[in-house]
Image 1 (spheres, rainbow, N blue to C red):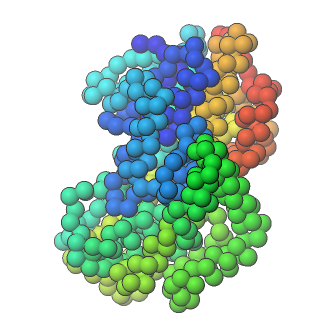
Image 2 (tube, rainbow, N blue to C red):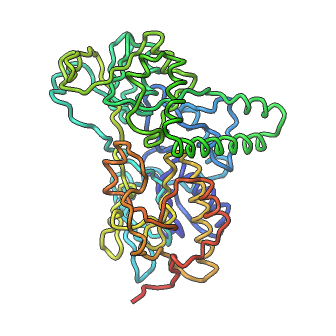
Image 3 (tube, rainbow, N blue to C red):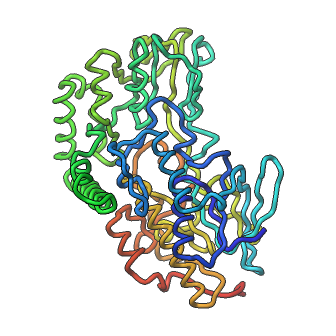
Length: 482
């Protein structure tokens, strides 16, 4: 089978790609290949209690499909419903092939096509395409980060990783320890604290947390007097500008921002808790800030249903965890919210003329293509704002690029490897553990445009929507160059 474009992944990015291809490249054939048995990506994979968006749905939602619910911070099932609605509304169902996992992709320079090997329910099939667009996210779906703890086999209770949540798990009236301090941990703790006897969030180091309402009062008001699309547009831009402003202020005035975040937290749970468990050693936005909708974690702590322990683990015991301080934390269930493993190319073995492509040896072009790799794009969202904002822009750019290739009458386009642009190893300047662990497999960032990854939506809008994409860093050609 041959398609003009193959999109890998049927999560938020893949669905956005399908919409944009139908709208902007109506003469192109495409398929969205999803390795799992359902659409939704992250929102179908994670089933742990309380699973929700960690940014508002007016920016996590698609630009072209208004989010019409009251809640701005939405739970997993609501997001899945929204994605199914989008597929139905824009007639994408027949373009999505489930249980089609791409295992390898080889660019054939002679034929100017991608040759794909696809695992379809255990059998391998071949497929070719002119353009390959990876929309499968940036972490492994099969291998989360699971550090080995000393003597963990001695623990007699259950150990669960949130990525592989056991939905039959009975945690009612149980003592639970959640290891971790990121978005997953702060989501799970208040969600299970309602039924559990007590939940301890055991963290090695604190994270910045900010409380916010789960419903946007301005959105609720405007929806009563304005059409849905107008309200969505206004609230979306209100939130985009607010996110951009707060990120800018945090980077420019880190100490002032830190003091403000801590002051707000102290108003909710007191100075003692904040000083001991919510005061990180790093600056705001050196790592992602965790959102607490309606102060849920703070409420659980105030109600004595949850508590925070900041310490390091010495070993697991039969009935809990022994800490390096000598303190013991009792547990019937241990939840290891220890993070994800980064994955550069959607777990696909990518090659050019059968020579393996190592992303870490290549520059990222505009944060979405790789130097020296033809007819190839990756959707990599923002880490300092909603993922979808960047995914939408990437899809628009890919469509513009495909149409420009048609206009020029060429079959190939690739970013030229710019030796003068090398200089910064880090694709993202975040200190989060999962980024630091996985940077060696991610593409490199350059020291100047268009090789620099700005993580700035307002800048990217100009680069993608308004500026010409026909620049000297892109090579357009028709066949293999000698």
